[in-house]
Image (cartoon, rainbow over all chains, first blue to last red; front, side, top):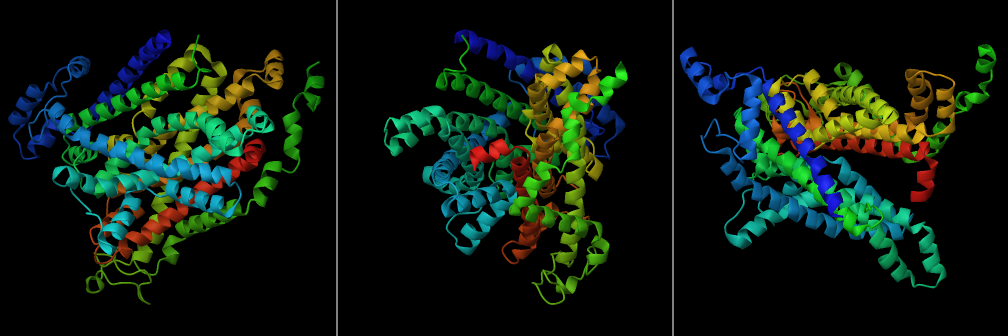
Length: 311
Length: 299
């Protein structure tokens, strides 16, 4: 078991390194000069040159890359070109907001998606099943930002129940402002979850051991909830883990729509301002989170399902 | 002795099969939802192709007197904040979505299926390295990857196609790799190898025709992804730049006026939803048709 975890950790390190390398060189092939972008087109060549020197842009690319890696290991992403603030500080203040949004939407997603998926699988080929499937299909086909607009339109403008922007004051205020964005993102996740839970349960229902359980006279409720559900939720857990990537993209859009501070808004602001250190920091943090989640999913998987646990 | 081997088609049973009526197509035709979505998509493609003839107004002409006007007999879907006819803009916007969609899917299919098939067929160290590399690309959210590339280069249609296309390569490669690995162990591939067929020949004439179904499914489902990402990039303001109408930037224009005239954002949104739902339904229908086993098990 420990050997498996160590091996999985060792695999994660080159992947993370490779991703960081892609991000570094991806942003370096930019045709624009960050120093010019920062000082504006009217800046004198001397000023630009001085800034390039200060930012280390005149060093060879390989040297810049090594320095960049060393800094990341120490948790230093440089300073913002616009505000001059340390990028790590900005990431640190904004990340919890995004994380909170992501977790609450996973909560809502599971709350809505898994039960509906179970109903859909149990009542296969009936009216409830078809309607749930149509709704789920719509859910996975609507881009998050469009769905966000619909939600604002309905729940903030037509029926002013929820605020459409900001984070709110105090615990209850924050919770209140969090509700609509996270339900929006949660509903999108739940659409994918419904489809996945349904097909996973139907896969399991046809297994031999279920037939055995039924033949033994185990009550149907017990068969469904104790045998089928438990086994079919394993892939669902993995799917939630893998969905984190899309969830983070969704969070970027939802944050923009609801004007909430977070990693998404930070990244989008960095793009409009051509603030490379901040954008770089956001991207690195995103990929780190995705990798860590993948790692946790793999490890938890081997705890849940002994069949995959390597000897 | 070579000619005898060639004549004996019995070594290549899949060639015989292709001459018969395709059972996949027969199965697909029975799926009403699938056929309906195919028809809708063909209509949208025709609209995109013949857009200049169908548009009632010039989509860039500004009529400031009618600014923000609601739907009327003259302007069926109303007028946007800059006094432009919304219906005309939606019609022209279909071009952007579909060109970027087909383009990016073509790029990702050509690269991804190639890489995936070679990695799956060769296996070993090559497979490890390639998949590790693709995993790293996959861990960057597609939207941010698109943002990164578009900001780094420019926001032309070609850049968008290449950026989104590359972002989808890992997904394509995974499917192609998995199907190839499964097929590699089959008897007919082994016999082809033992007869001395080259790797390229095996990949192109023996493996590719047998995994086309799976590849078609992932490409169709990717169309939805591309169209959604393209719209999201436009919405964030980093996609194709105004005044060229795209559904994404039309929704963004409308979002600022959502209080007074929600239609401006909603109508292009509805067009977007119809197209992406249709691609998803079509993908599901093709999957059911090419893999009856799944159909029987899941439905």
